[in-house]
Image (cartoon, rainbow over the protein chains, first blue to last red):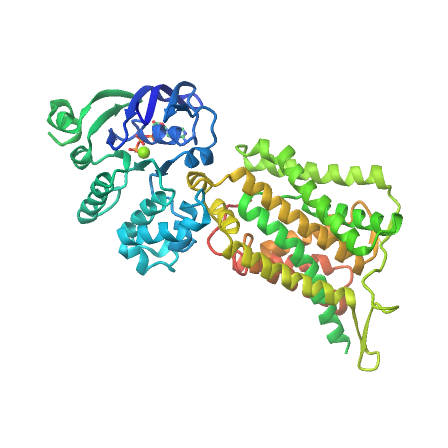
Length: 235
Length: 296
Ligand SMILES: Nc1ncnc2c1ncn2[C@@H]1O[C@H](COP(=O)(O)OP(=O)(O)OP(=O)(O)O)[C@@H](O)[C@H]1O
Ligand SMILES: [Mg+2]
């Protein structure tokens, strides 16, 4: 049984039909990526899974349970965390307070351990623990956003363009972290513009085009596909 | 000696403004709305305490606790009924609704409690005395003034500790910065906003009791002007900022008493607002305001 299963979801912003019957699955332990151009509907899909948006039709199931009508905070409690596009860390709060917010659904006794785990993965954050998040560099902010999402010990981690706006070396580092998380057994749904990097870490991938899935397959298959090469990998 | 006595009245009046302004600023900071009915919750708190003490002969402490409890519930009810359905609406719609709630409360009070002024009982006394005299009777400090200033400082310190140290308080700050991101952390934003209204309204009840203890006439419109002044104080100090509301409230009280004493009794309010305008021209975010906040 798939961990997450979206079945023909349609999502609208008022009269704008942004997601038109998208279906996909994420199995336990997999890294699945959604790639596609600007405005294809990738963030809309993630925000719908997180409960910030509601599908007009179609269903989303997590561990076989229908998420329909479930408020976003309950969805987090069920083990679905999202690290949103543009990071959206709490800029006026300290690094450590941001991490603590990530653990909002967790029992108080586990928070210190969770923070220690994040610091082990991102030692830079520990050096800056008392610093206000708004003063971090872009790369550090991305690490904080990922660390914060991990604080809820999610069964499924959704990452929306974690490499956005980062220098190549930092992009490399972010994808290394995704590989490490994968190896440790974390299930990941990754949204990316950087198709090359995303396909190289992904077990499976879906290509989203103006609100519909135009292609899907294993990472290697899509990497080899002419259509993907032309449109997303620069020929 | 009259100078010192003016300073003391200014600080004690300012402390009342500050307590009201703290409620305003908490609600604005998290819900990003101006709850113009805040001043009228003050009035309701004062009436509840008045009836508990004067009509039912309950001990003043019980009267205050009742006022706090009922205003807390009232604040949450107002949020639930009037503001929550407008969460996605333009801020102008919310503002107009808040003004409507304010008039609703004033008129409900008029209907239930009548238009005749009530004389609020003086219960902050020690023995028969309502204050202490210093310098052979030249300077008088009322116990109400002392209690007001102490309560104000304690409330501000409590709010700073709450928002800075507790999980719930930090969640409020997270909601204040980015509600969507807060939801993605598993924070129940609706419950957090409701709690902010509960805190703000509890503070309004305390302010109402203290204000009517100092200036003893109670009318359905009693909360209206202090509400507006306290809102001014919150903007003056930097809306959304807890120390800003405190500072703004104190300064407003002192400026008001000094203009009344040395310039003009009639023009005092006009001068108070003129000072506000000048401050905002020089520093649009208010004295302690941080970044440019959303314009209202
Ligand atoms: N709040 C909104 N109101 C109206 N339309 C929106 C809104 N958010 C997104 N859209 C529209 O929905 C479509 C999908 O947007 P979405 O943000 O999901 O794209 P995306 O694939 O994440 O793009 P990007 O790679 O640029 O982040 C776009 O056409 C966009 O203009
Ligand atoms: Mg996007």
